Length: 159
Image 1: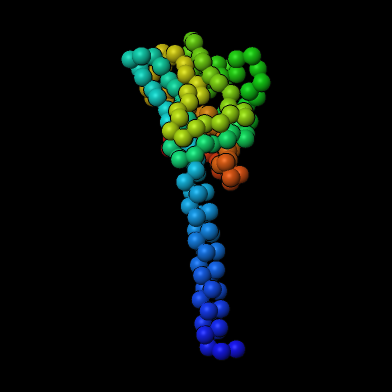
Image 2 (image 1 turned 90 degrees about the vertical axis):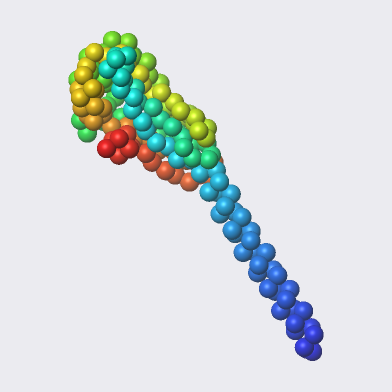
């Protein structure tokens, strides 16, 4: 083989290698550009007599909820009753009236969307509201549109 053929094969091989590397980098970038990132926030207002737990997708892609587990005093809490959020908050020590809550099973949260998981009218002090929330833990397992799994915990985000 002459030197010209060898150089042509070498340059073609390098070009093919660079193409595969660019495809790998592009795929990695695409996955990162649609990665969800869920965070919990709490809202307490003694003046408005309201307490709420909200979940926000601060990521760039949708978060597909796969599983939600709720705990009270580190024990699993059964959310299949008629009014599970009200029962949970009362057992956690919150003096509450009206409670609005939602289940997140098989739910998708789009990028920058905020969802109020539970909102309760209460006449507890701010300190009592915070203590109540710390007795409750919510673990949400979710996926990106690429099937990557993630987990977020209420009391990790609010510590």
